Image 1 (cartoon, one colour):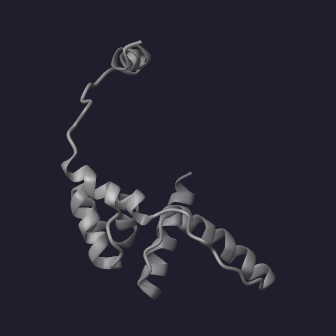
Image 2 (cartoon, helix red, strand yellow):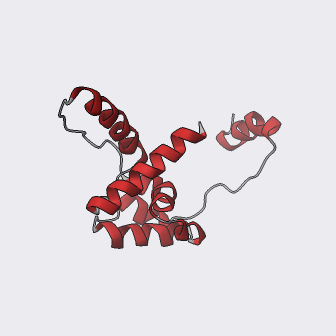
Length: 121
């Protein structure tokens, strides 16, 4: 599994360094698969990105440069916005000020019981 993570991180960085485009982790996997196939067959295609790099901000930004690892999640969102020029999705903006609804911590063995309590079951 670690080799796939490394390959995906390398692909994100390579594309960013060459083009300035910041791809999400799913698109990086698709890109790797495509380029392996294209190298063998010469087939050309279009990869339609299905996810936003904002969904995987930490993974994406750490792929570009390990210096981002020390930033908070919202600092990473702001940095991704600066680098990409892509507007931060409204759902992420809303999270910045959303109230915390659940802050319980439980042992794995207590998860089912805890979820039932939260749901009132």
